[in-house]
Amino acid sequence: MTTMAADAGAYEAVFDAALAADERIEPRDWMPDEYRATLVRQMAQHAHSEIIGMQPEANWITRAPSLRRKAILMAKVQDEAGHGLYLYSAAETLGTSRDELLDKLHSGRQKYSSIFNYPTLTWADVGAIGWLVDGAAITNQVPLCRCSYGPYARAMVRICKEESFHQRQGYELLLALSRGTEAQRAMAQDAVDRWWWPSLMMFGPPDDASAHSAQSMAWKIKRHSNDELRQRFVDICVPQAESLGLTLPDPELRWSEERGHYDFGPIDWDEFREVLRGNGPCNAQRITQRRRAHEEGAWVREAAAAYAAKHGEAQA
Amino acid sequence: MTAALALGDDALVLSHRLGEWAGRAPVLEEEVALANIALDLLGQARVLLSLADDEDELAYLREERAFRNVQLVEQPNGDFAHTIARQLYFSTYQELLYERLAHGSGPFAPLAAKAVKEVAYHRDHAEHWTLRLGDGTDESHERMRRGLDALWRFTGELFEPVEGCEVEWHTLHDAWLTRITSVLERATLAVPEGPRRGGWAAGAGRQGIHTEPFGRMLAEMQHLHRSHPGATW
Image (cartoon, each protein chain N blue to C red):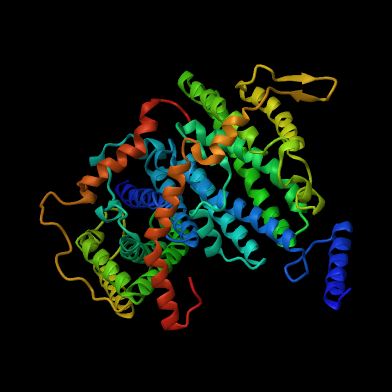
């Protein structure tokens, strides 16, 4: 064995021991290249989802039907920009800059959550996104607060607190609609009908078809399997839908005494793959708007950099 | 409550315009900053409009001619420099106005005392960007100059006395001009020349006379609320 190989072996042993002891890996610690790459990919995708996710909700800021709802929605969209900032910063601790990651988003080399490729057609969609999409995100993200990589885990603690606010606000928005006029109730039901199945797809492919799951579980980046989290989400949502007085669009949904869980119908994975492949209703629109904002903002960023260079100011 | 409507509508309308930036800002930090300013303004608007009547009835059920905001705040966003020019003119005015109201004994003193801290941040944000854009690149300088020039003719109206605000409008104007002049000088920009108001005896925003884009803004803002008469949200 060469000295270098022996060193690498020793580093790897320290890394493995830290994982085994459930300790956090920090930016300066040695880590396998694949672990680093997996984290960058996952954190970038999460950050991209936050900033692309601003679009379907921002779509309703200018039409929010009361000033209270408008304030709540604006604050929510602002939180998402903030989450994007923490996550890009957390990814920077692994040596990848925000510019690099944005470039990969804009050129399609990195992805964002497919759920944001669906349109927000009515005001009730804002509620359905809060209740179902943020609800699914929280179910996915709470375990990430215990992720083995320190900066990611810490960012997730703060993000999860804010997400659970968003989820409650979405639920409360739908509750107001379901107790409102007939037209409002119908609007709420229609939104839930459209968002339910895409929300279930947010947990990713079934365990036997998930490309990265096993390794991520071994590295303690991921703590539960896709199917486990999906089931947890369904179990939470069914009683909530009953309290809302709304139905979920799945005739096979029923409690199983035997499993101690709700059974649910088959998910249309063809649709999932199509949307992932770029053929969802809003894929082109979302990325075009993101690119346009970035390109139209180039002169602003250049001006800030030029000013900072002239005046020795820390860059904006 | 003429004054509550005037100040409340200023805040409501500018908040709405800033909300239109969501998802379109040039850099992520500005998504956060512009939303923050929009939220502060919306909070102010809700307090002020509630002093006059029901906030939602006022925001969603008045016709264009019943709004009392200055025309400056309803101007469309334009590019980022245009938005910053609007922010600079308005937040400088609003800070000076609220400082005076906070020290007075009128009904707006408590609100103004709280809001002036928020507005000081808005003004600081606008000044910093005016400096960066004015003294950044040739392109940003030119865009900032165009924004300042285009909006200059809406600045005269800011100093028209508002009934119910016990303020010396003349000294408020002088303080505003001194501050704007100093910022623009530091930003290597000239104070625009040309008229400060439109030549129409009917008046402007404070009299319910608005500019053409405002009706379209209200149509968008009000349509959902108006589509469901009597509904609660």
